[in-house]
Length: 129
Image (cartoon, rainbow, N blue to C red):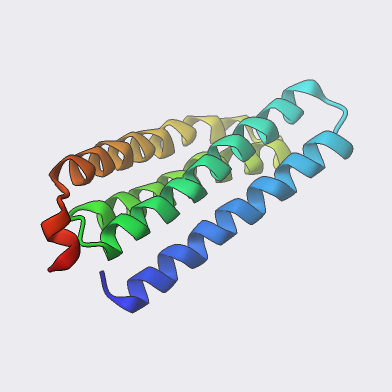
C-alpha cells in the first residue's frame, strides 16, 4: 500500500470515528425523539466499528496482506454511505434517505469479505517480502 493511500484511509477512518462520537453525543443529549436517537445511535455504532476495521485493514495491507487495502476502501465508502445516510435522515427528516442506507451496508459486507480473504491468504512470508 502506498503511503498516500495509507494517509487517506487513516484520515477517513478518523473522520468516521469523529462523526460516530459526535452523533452519539448529539443523540444522547440533544434529541428527544426516540426514532431519531436510534438512527444516530445505529449510525454511530456502525461508523465506529468500521473506523476501527479500516485501521485494521490498513495495518494488514502495510504488512503485505493482498486485498486488505481494498477492504479499507470498502469500509470507508460503506461507512460513509451507511452512517451518513442515517445521520442525514436524523438531521433533515428526509425518510427517503433510508433507501440509500442498504447500499452502504452492502459495501461494508463486501469489505468484510475482502478482509477475510486477505487475512486467510496472509502469511509470514508476505510480511517479510
